[in-house]
Image (cartoon, rainbow, N blue to C red; front, side):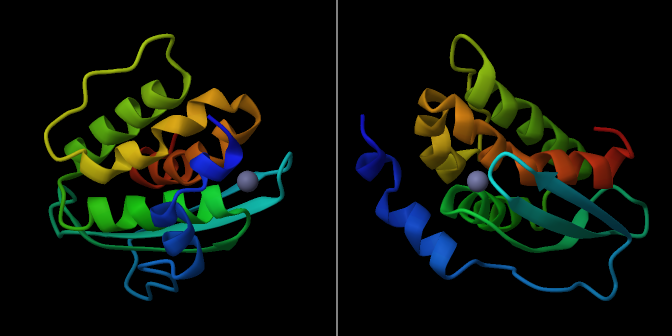
Length: 144
Ligand code: ZN
């Protein structure tokens, strides 16, 4: 697999036209992440439901490489409307997809997040893909 294959059409599309990009004035939690090795920066804003259990809305802002932007765009699309628990489960599986010795079992609904699976073959780019998920976890739990 070479870099041309890695930068698939979908990844480039999300990087060039990121979805859910911008501020979320009604956000209930905000977290930032920086990946110094690549220069990626991301801010995730989440609006949780009144009971704190559902992601009513989610947006991100930032700048960086195609992988970091596409990962953030795909994540926000996937998690909008999901429960907090499901979002944290996806965060765990995404990290396994990037770093575990063997690929995880993908939960139902994980879907096109698997587009980024090939990034695991490029260890120096893994932090680009996980940056936004780290920020999400921080926003949802206060921990990294
Ligand atoms: Zn990067």
